[in-house]
Image 1 (cartoon, rainbow, N blue to C red):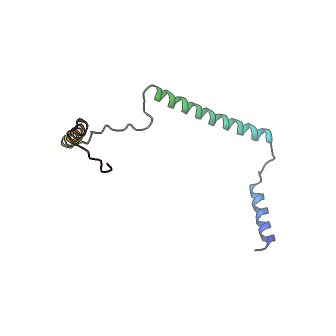
Image 2: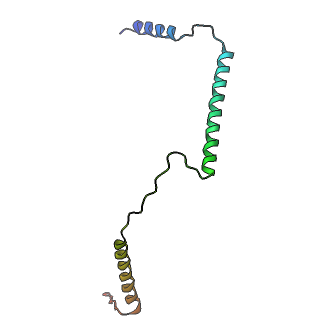
Image 3: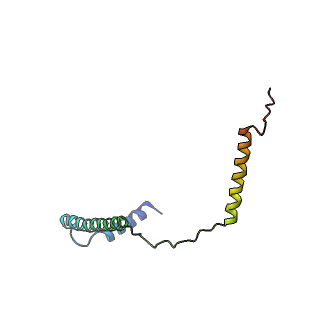
Length: 105
């Protein structure tokens, strides 16, 4: 590929991208400002709707179905008994029922 070959392709591409009519900056800016205003209005309306929905306790999107808690009462009882046993052991150390002998003395 020679530089002239690449240059010819770039020139050909730029001819295809050139507007068919004359340049009108006032029209182009007007179109851009109108489209930007429409997009801005859409964003503002969306945000107001979303805020109003959430402020009134609504949900945006699909509601999450209620789930039944998945726990087993016997497991909870076992855990509770473990903590009761630990509390009893702690009370024995604090009351003096267990004597801790410090090996450094």
